[in-house]
Each structure stands twice: as structure tokens, then as C-alpha cells.
Amino acid sequence: MRALTTLPLTADSLEVSEVPEPAPGPGELLVDGLAVGVCGTDKEIAAGDYGWAPAGRERLVLGHESLGRVREAPQDSDFKNGDLVVGVVRRPDPEPCGACAHGEFDMCRNGNYTEHGIKELDGFASEQWTCEPDYAVRIDPRLADVGMLMEPTTVVAKAWEQVERIGRRAWFEPKSVLVTGAGPIGLLAALLGAQRGLDVHVLDVVADGPKPGLVSDLGATYHHEGLDAVTEKLRPDVVIEATGVGQLVFGAMSGTSSYGIVCLTGVSSGGRTLSVDAGAVNRDIVLENDAVVGSVNANLRHYAQAAEALERADLDWLNRLVTRRVPLEKYADAFEVRDGDVKTVITLVS
Figure 1 (spheres, rainbow, N blue to C red):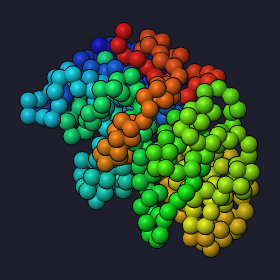
Figure 2: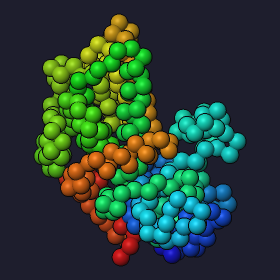
Figure 3: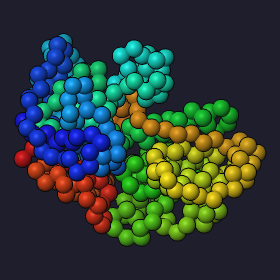
Figure 4: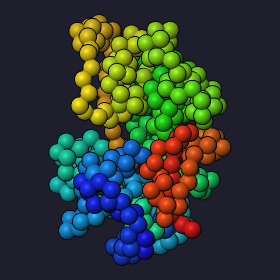
């Protein structure tokens, strides 16, 4: 069968390879791959920045934003043939740390977890894949065209959970949220903010293309001016930072209301130095009881939250989030940045 593979730590090694068809182990699902989303992590692995192949192998099957349809399901499982499913990305380490042992494998303490399409487990960019039923999530059949949005939605579901858990340390009744970045993570974070009834604001650098309309159709406000100008007039209760841009990260920390919470979901690139008044940032955080938290990956609870959020969302809006669909044989096109891109998807079936 065909799969999109790469040689980890080797740039320009992406190719469509012929790989053996998977043989499901005892109790496992056999799934026909339908599509995978392409994100910044995939592009960094393709560039040779990181990635780990499965033990004893040179190449890694890429793709962690999955969508598939069950071909074969064990009789004693909760799945049946034809179910639409996504695979959970991360697996806990084999000798679990305390967090992994309690199902919080997104918070792994020792780093011995594995991840499909990233770290020591093949991804889902193949015509078939297998999955343990405990790590497969059934999704609503109406999401057949957009189910690959599940994984990025889990990231923001976790981010919102972290914000709300921190808020509950004292009285917490947020009114407004600012999302920095209108990529898929930012727009999905805005969606979940709108579903919470908040006054949602989204900041991005572009002034045209599909992003302003996507934000407006959530009942939210789109901004493309500087961050300081936005935070000065808004003073948001919550900031979801989805760019990883250092200037925005520190600006967000300084721009919230009192008792503000900033959740960082964007991963910054190193090597760039900023001049920051660290004392002023510290003073604001301490005197206003602010909080800053980093959030990455997701556990099974967040997949359930994401599935609920997508089921509640407007289907047309979700479809507009997917701006390009690229067949597997033209995979290289999916790794190019084009004007108007929001979410690019690789389709695995002809």
C-alpha cells in the first residue's frame, strides 16, 4: 500500500513509499485511511528538524491529524465496520510515570511517550492503519469531510480546560478572550471561545483572504493592527497565544486584565533575541495575580471534548477552514505555503 514517509532528520526525504499492509494485532481495529491534515509539526519533520522512526526502521510514516473509516472491528469492541474514527496521537510510556499512569499522558514527566507520525510510531498518512480501540475515537458521520480537524481541536480543548482550571483558583467569570494567530489552532480556539459565550477577538497579520470572514461568522471581531493597540482597548480576561512569536508572547503577558490568564499553544523557534522589560512583565503578573501556562498535546478526555465541540459547530464553517485538499501523489503541494491557506489536507483515497 502507499504511505507518505520521511527519513527523520534528513531534509527533502519525503516520498510516497510502498509499505506492507498493516496486520491488526489481537483486539485492534483495521482502518482505511481517508485523509490527514498537514500542520507546522509535519513541515518541521519534513525539513529534517526532528522526528524519530520506529525501532529497527529508517523511515517514518508521517501524519498525526488523522481521519479513517473502520474496515474491521473486533466483535467485543465498541466499534463496527464503517465507523468514522480518528487515532489518538500519543501513547504513554511503557513504564509509565505518574502522569501517564493516571491517563494524563499529555503531561508525561520523563519523555518516554511515543507519538504517531512524530516519535517512534508510524503516522496515519497511509491507505490503511491499525489502532487499539482504547485509542480510537468515533466521530459523527456528518464530519466525514472535516474529521481531520479533530486533533488540532483537541489541542485547543486542552488549552481551554487549562484556562478554566486555573481560573477556578478564585472567582472567575471571564467576559473576553483574545486569540493571537488565525491559523487552524487560533480559529479553532476562537470557535471554542464563541461556544462558551465569550466576546471573542482574533489578531492576525493579514487583512484579506478567508480569515476575517471566518472570524466574523463566529460572531467574533477580527484585528490586524498591532497587539498593543488591541490589548490597550480590550484588556482581555483570557489570551490564547497560537503563534509562538516571541513579541506576541510577551505582549500578551502584559496586556491582560487583572487576574488575566495567558495560555501559550504556539511553539517558538529559537535563535531570535528580543529586548523585554522583564521587571515590568513580572510586576504585572505578580500584582495582578495573572497566570501564564503552556499547553501541548492532548489526552483522551480532550478528544471527547473536541468531538463534542465539532459536533456543535456549523458544518459549513468547518468546511471553509479546509482551504486546500491535495491527493497523496501530489503531497509536495501540501507542504507549500500559498496565499489564502488556512488548513491543507492530504486525501488518501482516489
